[in-house]
Image (tube, rainbow, N blue to C red; front, side, top):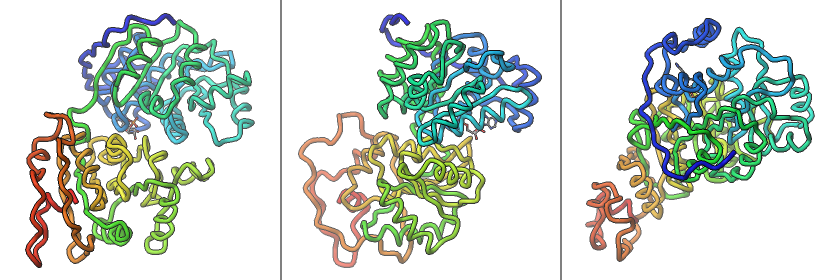
Length: 442
Ligand code: AMP
């Protein structure tokens, strides 16, 4: 498709609809929505569904937990309505991870209630043979990760000539993890007449470029909340020495009694270790990371969604995009690698307006990383403590502050800037703890 001019994409104010009837949906769709107990459209659905039904290309800035899957699934199902005679898919949904592929397929199948449409997910880690057999039987909607979709295209086990709609879900995430060349190869093989819907939590320049190149005059709708993290999520941190993290975790779980929780670790080995040690103390624990076989990962996620697993120890690879509405607690056992990852991790709780709480374990050396997160979300995290639990052995002598500001002028949250000591603080009097702002920066 010809590249469009490169001026900035303008965003339109999404229109609100208070009922699904108002959106002009068929009786079949309304019955399906009743069956899944969705009473009224979320803002993302109210905005995207009518425009997508009208045939427009839509770029929706929306993150998971806002009902975005149904926002693109409903128009797809309404447009395809019933299976065609051909065997080739008429809708393709590209997603960044295997877990999301399964999640989108499940949601679409639930919403396809009353239709005979065939929805299938194809992703790496599962035998190609079974997927080929399913594709050969005929699939109306294919949901897949870019790598595996390309695999099938290369083997001619999937053709895209019949496509009417293409969805790029979590486009920013797909670009982040290096799927751009794969996505472009796939899009170049799709019919030019297709409709394209793109969903992304952020619309940074790489997403805009993709949209300009492969979408026709997209309507941009911004559903992002004003703050980076949802207001219903309380966020706190603990200062803790690395060797004491595990004991702190046990104490915290005892105190909090979470309905469901995800504990994020930085590495696969670390995830295994925390899982192993925690299983000796608490029941209902499982773990998930990228080294586990796909069928095991699928089973772990199924049990977690069903509420059989109460606590999931995970790496970021699989943590992002997980949508389980009863997650009440997020515990960042290890600090996330980037501040963006923090926002994604924490966003696993507080789904659909529910309340959630996120705790982050910060070692005394990681004060600066905490500050970076606070700058990104423009909010200070509250400090937490477990009475009687000594989380930090001793206060190290304070380091001299950096000579210049750690961030560009005007970009730091006001309180953070004010809290930075201008000079190294004096050591605390014997028996007294250091004031919070100094201890944190150590
Ligand atoms: P998503 O943003 O697509 O990950 O959706 C988040 C959660 O909201 C999923 O568990 C959906 O089943 C649920 N959901 C989506 N739309 C609605 C709705 N209109 N009413 C109630 N729940 C919904």
